[in-house]
Image 1 (cartoon, helix red, strand yellow):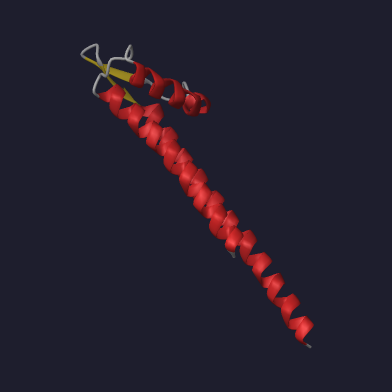
Image 2 (cartoon, one colour; image 1 turned 90 degrees about the vertical axis):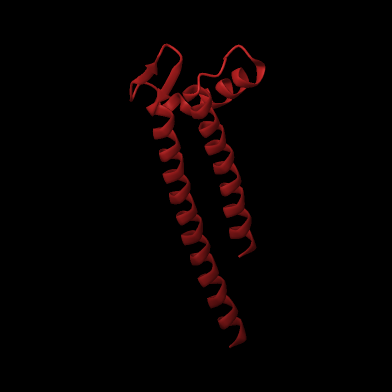
Amino acid sequence: MRLRYIAINLLNFFLAVVEGFLALRFLLKLFGANANTGFVNWVYEMSGVLLEPFRGIFPTRVFENRFVFEFTTLFAMLMYAIIGLVLAYLINAVSAVADDSAEETVVRRKR
């Protein structure tokens, strides 16, 4: 039970960090942030690794030569959220099976 709690919390933490970086990237690109500044460049580098599996799937729209709407970032956010949900389901399913087998062991020992 405690292991499931820790695993779910770790999963939620990492998912929040990933989604946060991607959301920040999306907003900075959308509002045309200067990529030459340290913070913006750091966010782009960190989130670029997360976008790598999804590059080239969707086109990037540029408005007024400055504002960028990245469909790929939104798609990546959706996919990471779905992966997080599937992993949470699997953690719950595996820990439920482990809890059931532990209960059976306790019942057998009491007999």
